[in-house]
Amino acid sequence: MTPVRFAALGDSLTEGVGDRVGDGWRGWAALLADGLAPAGAPVEFRNFAVSGAQTLDVLDRQAPAALALRPDIVSVVVGVNDTLRRTFDIHAVAARLDQVYAAFAAQKAVLLTACLPDPGAMLGLPSVLARPLARRQRAVNTVVHALSERYGAVHLHAAEEDWVTDRTMWSADRLHPGERGHRVLAARFHALLAADGFAVGCQPSVEPELPPPTRSASLLWLATAGTGWVARRCTDLLPQLLRLAADEVRHRARGTSARLDIRTSHAVAAALAALSAAETADAA
Image (cartoon, rainbow, N blue to C red; front, side, top):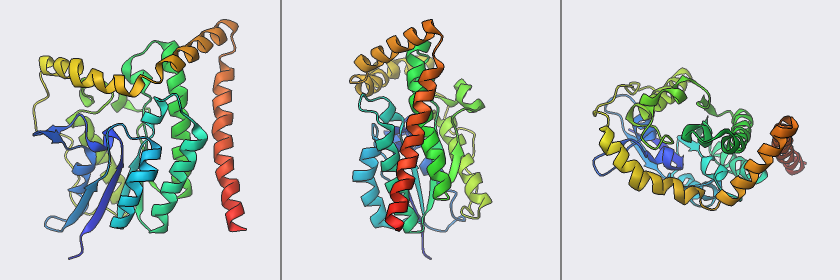
């Protein structure tokens, strides 16, 4: 029997951070893999996701390896780490995602995508710091929405729903789902795939198998590995984020904050228009 081949690309969310099993991470993608085929039927699952990955890492490293597998189903969930870098460029993010999506579409793979919550809100940062990060994540989500539609992806809306504010879904670092959150993501992806006839196995249970970490264990992880995770991803952003916050304060004082939102919207529109123009030129 030919196995269903499922490749997962992305960052720590897809790697499974927050859903610890033994000495490693499991995560929503592994949970989803178990429900793609009927009981006893083979599923070949490869998780190429790496903690800290950005869209460039997915394009240059993960996608070529996954394309060699010729997956039937491929998930590409990435972009949050791009927003946490001073080099953030929505034009570059859009171009990279377009290349990755197009490559798998050319292989006729079923493409899974998702929009995600902004990290500033999840971390509970002050509004002058959170709002610039929120604009960046909204920009990435808008691009993902548009490209998902272009390539006929199975898209999960996971950015602004009840699960985001439900603390039982999240691990101690407030950025990664806990076991319950990963299970909810897997179940929701499964439901979307099943509706289109691409998942024929049992839907993953949303109920955790393991007891939640104790408060002391969560605090210990946050004080060691969790804090280090955040620090490594935000160090080069901090000087720029402080400048963005100062810009936020100035516009708020002048009553012109809407200009910052408009500027971001124009940048996203220009990035998507550039992709459309390139596609038209290639077709000609």
